Structure formats: C-alpha cells, structure tokens
Amino acid sequence: MVLVFTLSSCCSLRSNKEKRRAMAVNKCVKYLLFIFNLLFWICGCIILGIGIYLHVTKSNLSIGGESAPSFPLTIAIGVIIMVIGFLGCCGAYKESRCMLLLFFIFLLIIFSLLLAAGILSAVGKNSVKDSILTEFKKLQPLSRQPASVIQDVENMQRTLQCCGLTDGPQEWTAIPDSCRCNATATNQDTCNAGVYKLPCYTRMINWMQSNLQVALGIAFGVAVLLIFGMAFSMVLFCQLGRKDGPTTA
Image 1 (cartoon, rainbow, N blue to C red):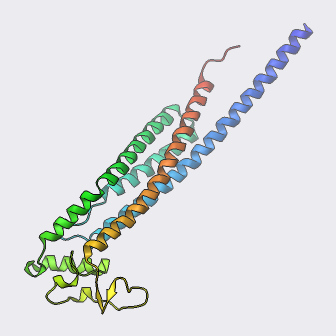
Image 2 (cartoon, one colour; image 1 turned 120 degrees about the vertical axis):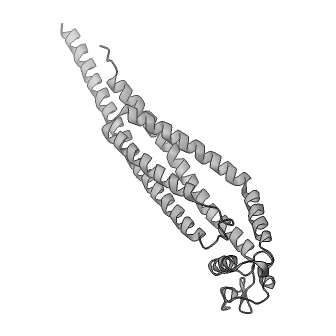
Image 3 (tube, one colour; image 1 turned 90 degrees about the horizontal axis):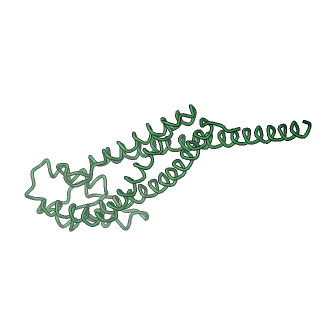
C-alpha cells in the first residue's frame, strides 16, 4: 500500500509539474503573439502613412492623371494589416482557437499576396518605365499642349526639380519659372546655370525607385513578422487543443 501510494504521489507531482510547465509555455507563446500583433499593427500604421503620403505627393506628379501610379492599394493594405493585428491581439488574449486559426489563415493570405506583389513589381518595373515614357512622348512638343497640361507639367517640375519631360530644358521655347533654380555646392548635379538640367522622366524614375526600395524594405520586415506570427499562432493553437482535449489517467 505504501509503495502504491508513493508511486501515485510521484505521478501526481509529475503531472502537476507538466501542467505548470505547459501553462508557462502557453503564457510565453501568448505574450509573444500579443507583442507580435502589436508590432504588426504598428507596421500597418506605417504602411498606411506611406500610402497616404504617396497618394498626396502623386497629385503633383501626374499629368491628366496618366503619368504617376496610384497608391490606394497601399492604403488598403495598411488598413487591413491594422485590423488583422488588432484581431490577433484579441485572439491571443482570449485564447480562442477559432480566432487563432482565422488569424493564421489571414496571415498566410497576406504573405502570399506580398510575395506575388514583390514578384510582379520586379517583373513589371521596365513596363512601368516604358509606359511613363510613352505618355511623356505623347505630350511633345509642349508648345502645342493646352494650358491645363502646361500647368500640370510645371507643378511636376517644381516638385521633382526637373525641366522638360524627356529631353531637358530644350523642350521649352521659353524657359518657365518652374525650371529656374539657385545653383549651390549641394545641387550641382541637378542645377546648371540657374536651370534644372535633368528631365522629369529621369527624376520620376529615380523617385519611384527610391520609394520602391523603401517599400521593399518594409515588405521584407512585414514578411518576417508574418512568418513569426504564423508560427506563434499555430503553436498556441495546438497547445490550446491539447489543453481542451480529453485527459487520460
């Protein structure tokens, strides 16, 4: 009897230790998933801010709405990521397997879309350049364009610090004020004899590439967070399943 009682006590102690260890692991994963979703929500805020900035800036880079790409998709992605991050925090806090599974599926979908967008942006980069060049060529010579188009071109020249569409200042019969610049030691590459020397096509491509690099950097960071989020959510999902499942003596 004493031996049986001793064995039973040892098994009970071991079972209690395993339960405490499992609870500690659950709390650790739960808090990690909560922190992840907080970072994920912050990334959504950053993407939303970038999308709004690019959308506002685009208004000064378009001619009849044709020359610059639109960025409503970036804004939508930022909002979606913010919502999913908030839902993920709720799922981790409430320890809901249903919410965790939905959260995992949403992350997997976003990861797939992010990967597809990266591939499409890399493949379609040259086609975007060709499209912008074609639209600019249609507007030449500038002397034959209506006043509304000329106003759009001058707004773009002020924003990008450029002159002319594809060939530089020689496209104008009379250099407009939007092409004028003050030469300093820091802008010798863009300002020559008081006039911006680079065409707007070159400056726009440089602007797009610099913003694309920022977007790719953010996308890479979001992708890493997505991988960790999927891993944490699935670990917590499985642990909650074992916790809710039937126990055997």
